[in-house]
Length: 303
Image (cartoon, rainbow, N blue to C red; front, side):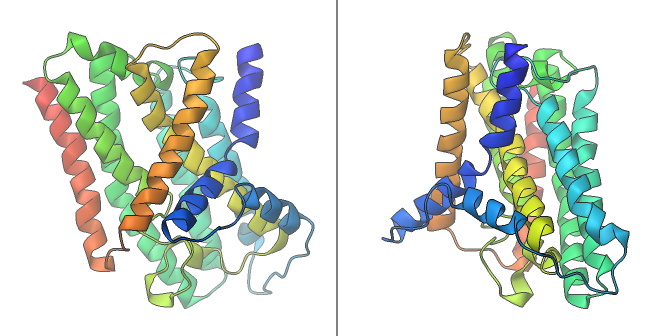
């Protein structure tokens, strides 16, 4: 019961801090002070107290979509474990539900953008689903490798692949390859540089931001919160795999997990500081490299 409480506490409260770490890191590289670490908390609370402007051309989809998106990400967060502790929800094949929860969230996000009748938001939706078709194969290949390494068919067991690497030939190389592949996937799913720039407003390069331009007030606050939670949930897969190598148990496990998430946010900030956003035509090549990394790691295990 205590583990479930800690899981919920971390899942609900911790995520908005992570974008703050990213932005603070980028400000450090640029020689600026930057916004406070807790800026996103302030922004979400401020948005929740504002009114909304809703176009008369929209339907119920536009209003309901942010809530469904947040609900999907929240359920996915209950499936993924925090460190070596078991998740709140786990069952055989839960990694499939985990994957399609994000697919459902993406469907409603793009549907809400199309519901506005804006060609601009339609352009962003088209880019989102096109890149998603290259992201999901990499994720499934990564999950197949984790199943092969651990013999488990639920995420709570699969992310402990680091503790099982000594039992498989070539497992270290496979694990490194899927970590690199998942990091690329992580950047793409969270609309980070070099795939997308969450701070840009240049029309021809926007992907995620263009789809939420018509949302305001509490709806925009829900979207910002869901984005931060998505950052946390997908990043948890990476951190869980890495810390499972050290077989840490007990209460220190939670501290190591939180430290790992903060380090991941710092690494994202460094990545965005030393790289420029790719040309739109180059993004598919990057995503295909993620598929190749995760797919090749599976082939290595079969040797």
